[in-house]
Length: 301
Image (cartoon, rainbow, N blue to C red):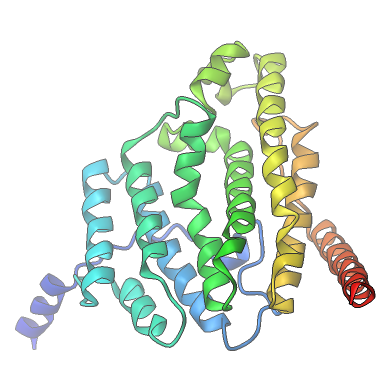
């Protein structure tokens, strides 16, 4: 028995690096009750896979080389559909994906982003940051659209929303990212332009320069939010549309907070009551817009 257990340990080493984060700790809803029950298990499997890979990439003490090695094991599991050792989350995802319209490339893109996180700590300009978001965030929205049978032409809207959410997260966590991982997503050219030194991410100095930098990021974020706002009414699935409307609303509320809060000093979060009120407002607003759209369509006929 001891030889058998030893063999298992060698064949399936524990590559996980749990951070304690889960769906309940995220800024935005993950497979909420607005999503149809038949799709929630697949979304949960995709989240578990992404959470595991993200935790590996963000672990503060694992070396970059070891992070990439573990992420490569997850990638090989996706590609071969054979557990490479400790990759059960990846294997479960591809197994479950057989019953859904699941494109494995979305999972592979996420892994490419996490490997980039393990090796890259600075971003030269906004375009460089968006290229990263196209791997780290956009695949999540595309995955959700795919399993709901939505048209790929709507990727443009989900890409904008997911990329905006990723950047909002970077602006919220800029201090922690630098302090714990020496990772700075604030573009170099924008930091230089606004005279902000990254060492001041760890204190309240350079407040004016940080405010100018944050404001420039938010100005560049506005077009993404405008495009993202088109997503809910573009979807066939009304449940996914409602979920999207809620997420767009919560994102806008966080952007408003970022406009006057210094995220280095005060955590930029929404209280539970603010999130609930915002969600109800989004659902109501979406319902009204949907009715108007239906009326206009029928009049046009």
